[in-house]
Length: 87
Image 1 (cartoon, rainbow, N blue to C red):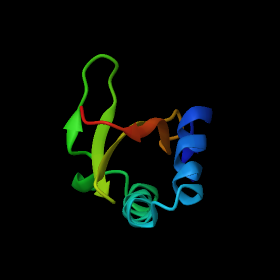
Image 2 (image 1 turned 180 degrees about the horizontal axis):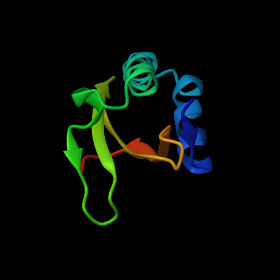
Image 3 (image 1 turned 90 degrees about the vertical axis):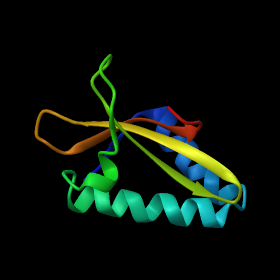
Image 4 (image 1 turned 120 degrees about the vertical axis):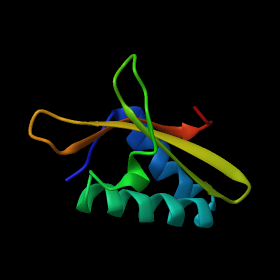
């Protein structure tokens, strides 16, 4: 199961309310990959050093979103940030 920071959770849920369906679908697809296999290279595109987080992007509806995450103490993904932007 994926854990979310409160603001990251709110931002991902807002995608559906804002009718950005393509972006939401792209994000859902990558979150499925993250949940199924956090070691998959698609969700480990870049490694941030300070703080030590993994980063990947999704694009849809003319917008790019960044997702910053790390494994929690039990090894499950925890998303610290999901929102517009590129790292």
